Amino acid sequence: MNSDIASRNPDRVNWTSTWSSFSHSAAGPGVDPGTSGNVDHTLTRRTVLATAGAALAGAIPNSAEPTEDWAAALPAAGNARPISMAMHIHGPFSEGTASFSAHFEQARKLGVDVIWWTDHDFRIAAFGHRQAVHFDGASEPENGEDWKWVKETEGKPTGTVTAFVASPHSPQDGTGKALRLASKGKGIIWYRGQSWNNTMNACIADTELTLDLLPETLPADGSLLFELQLSNHPGKGVLTLRYQIGPFPAVTHTAKGAVGTVRLPIKPAQWQEFTFVLVDDVAKLWPDIAAGDNALTGLRIGTQNAGFVVDRLTFHRSRRAGQAGELLRAEVIAAAAARHGAGITHYRALEVSLVRHLNWFGGDLRFPSFPNPPIRDNNPDLTASMVRYLKAHGGLVCWNHPMDVAKRDELVKLMLERDFLGVDLVEIGRKPYDDLLWVFDVAARNALFFTAVGSSDDHDAKDWAKEPEHDITYVWANSTAQADLLAALAKGAAWFTDLARYRGSLDLRIGGVSHMGAVLLSKTPVTVEAIATGLPSGAKAEVVVGVADEAGTVPSKKVEKSKTVTVQPGHYVRVQVRLAGGDIVGVSNPLWVLAKAPKRPIPAVRLRA
Image (cartoon, rainbow, N blue to C red):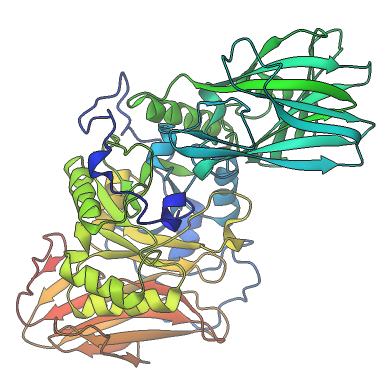
């Protein structure tokens, strides 16, 4: 997602001179990271219901029962069935609060057949992530990028002291400063840490923290609090792991709902180093969850009726070098799936994030090189080069949120001049919807043969249907096997719908045979039947017929109301669903009828005689 800081600073740095030591050909140890995380290849009841055009019970909030149906008894597209996919989903290896477990429950609740896990590549590797904080001041650089402390209060602490001091400081930290924190009463004085571009955030499965502490004032009811925000879990919410360090006789673990407290004893008036093995403490506090299925998403340090000097916070991540982070991710996904993934097919993918963002489906998932520091560069040449690298390693590549750094006219110009950067898929089903559909029609006019997909870009796993980006992608495929899904995407046998408001099936057929995404070379008109099932009350299906002359930078199209249209050579056709209020909530990929071969090669999987 474009939450990465370089999305907001696209011209920050060019990475041509800052390559890291990661090699394009670096092989990970042991397990092939491209191995599927799939747990179920069977067609589920969700698919059967979608095939019949029925609304899923509880899956479409606030939608009425369908009253119009262009294909009430939808015939199969050969042996294929409609399969729904959330194609842009982030877990605890990205920067948000999502867990894989919570995403599994969202897929089950909303009747989605397949999840593609698209965590950010450099975040999986924890490349350029924060290594240490030395408490030298309110802002502290590392590798040229800042960590910042923000002071907060909870309740009404009195007698507060907050200062970065040259002495005392930890004997393990060389020169520099430390943070003196003191408060009286029942309130808490906090310092909240903020890392540049969320580079503190990382999955806790291999993470240990250390912290050096010197108690200066420690009454019987006083303590230092080291509080960590983790991830969102089904039935619990976002977990908080709180370490309370004080004059306690023994280590204890206590959980109350989403808050878990670990009490740790400390000796007065001497420096002590504490090591926090997060996954071990989470496992003791919440034995009913997959402990590693958490990210470190927030951190703060405070005192309650006590005085401490705090120094040398370190982050140790033991399994991130080379390809190891991807192997770790596979293990964490498997653990979450064992508890929550029954009946949900799922596959690992990557969001390649330091160029214009690209989702990579089905390849070997070998990390590319990363620039250091990990700052996004939107240079189209770099993105095109990355697309070539990814496709050389197998699978399909999707251009994500293509309008995050370009207006629609700029995007069209780039697509036409650079052959849409060589990608296979483009996220068209997302905001700004009208602009992206405009781009989609210009691309269809110019015979740009990519597959439009919907964006389910979710980092929190709280409610997919209420997230700003909640379009899912359907394909006509023989099964949920990865090869079948990728084959359907490659040939354009796909459509996208608003997860919350429309879940029917779309298709374009000739003589009863599915041709959505296809290119026909024909000098005579072709009769096409548009399929749209499960229309909500008041909604209508529209058949869009446009000129495909490879000659314009604006759409040239009209809307037909009939389900059967005659498409003249030199045109394309697609079907869309419009609600009574005017919103478009479902869009198919086009079918082209061309009198002659276009300027750009027709992919073999799309060409029909």
